[in-house]
Amino acid sequence: MLTEVCDFVHNYFEREVYEGTFTISNGTINLGTKAIDGQRFRIIGSALNDGIYTYYTDGQIYDDDNTEVVTLSAETFTGKIAVMGVPIAFLRIVYAISEWLEKNQTALDSPYTSESFGGYSYTKATGVGANAGGVLGWQDVFRSKLNAYRKIA
Image (cartoon, rainbow, N blue to C red; front, side):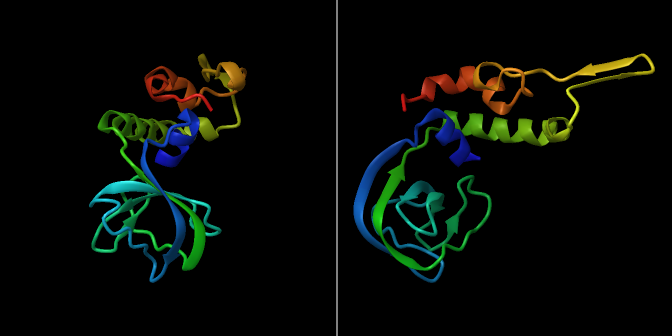
């Protein structure tokens, strides 16, 4: 989810960007002293592993939300590694978005925008802007909280 939200606000909270040739082997990448335990990093320019991950010096790499161990695909690539400094307040918003999606996924997946039967009536909230007329998504619900982190693309 962190990747999607960073994409949405055009902000990856990059602290240091290292350019060069990098090797991924045995499912991991050694960032040496570039990152500390639990720090997120972004791979850019890889054919197989572009994305945001969480780094641990014991060799474990976790997904962008730091919930599941991932195995990176073996490759050598020329690109960038961006070490990130994601604010805790931003991560709290990302977790709130994940919870909101989990709670509302059934309604979001429903093909109906409204229904009525036996005295019961239901209408989904609709989006604004680019999503006008569509179902209200996390982008609409959390837009005001995310705006503080938005960068101009």
